[in-house]
Image 1: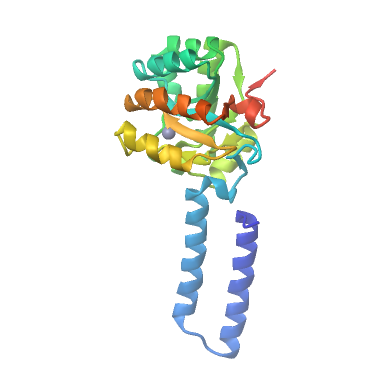
Image 2 (image 1 turned 90 degrees about the vertical axis):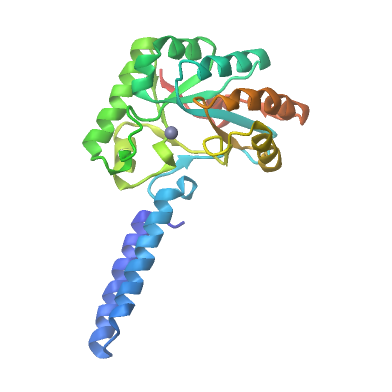
Length: 258
Ligand SMILES: [Zn+2]
């Protein structure tokens, strides 16, 4: 499998062979430019594609042979939208996973308590969700993870083990931080696109055509249109005899330290 380590070794060898070849038969400068461009492109693809497992393995999928899916929500808690989503989940008797932002958890502690009390699981999604989070040092990344973990622990008494990288972007620093924290990285296999599309009918149609056995589905619980979307999508899944399982059971993970 294509990994960061293998790629580094491959390109180091390729560069060495190119330099040796250059000594025997002078090569164009553009050969070197080409090698560097391909190298950078692979690193960028690895960063942007959490499912690639390029920098670290992330849980992005359940069992493709089992008619089940897991619902996951990022970027909350939101003071208004998250409680409405919790209402829908309660009505439908569905348990989900919430990847929360630490500073929002501090703002809406009651929502975190409710998520936990109603049987959903909570994972980390950084403290700040800063636009440049992926450029933070390992120390700063870990400080964000720990601060968020501490906030959730103070509210629920549970120590989180799951982490979803902000923007789904991974890199060597984040990979080291996740390993050092003993977290499990969680991605997704189907995203609802609810951050770019506001029309719940359009979102529903896209989900219906995309959903498959074993999908981990990504939503955002700070987008009000997701409430209406769930009111139709969850009954659709039930109608199609999908089981909607909580992520930890679904993917055989531990959500918390016990
Ligand atoms: Zn996010």
